[in-house]
Length: 106
Image 1 (spheres, rainbow, N blue to C red):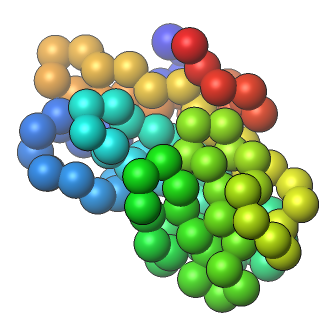
Image 2 (image 1 turned 180 degrees about the vertical axis):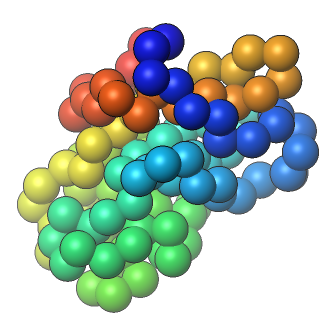
Image 3 (image 1 turned 120 degrees about the vertical axis):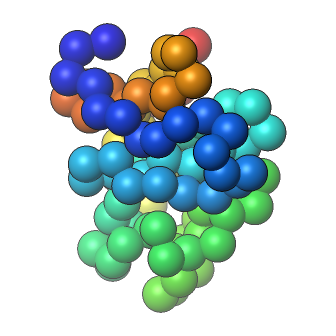
């Protein structure tokens, strides 16, 4: 994974978010997601919103985004936010900050 940046140690936090460049890394059960930390509707930080399951909600207008794909799951947003590939190596979580995608990484 070229252009990767550490988002922290795996297991260091039980759950939550960690800054990784211009995006946000969120740990689900044993999966980590990373998205751009800006709502596509209102240009405010998504990191200040609530996460439930695989959905993050923008605190300002309530737009919801799927953490796996970046696609909006609820109005008023209509455009996806970029997602970033994540990988765990030696207990560290890495985010590929140079390769954003609108499709889920398999």
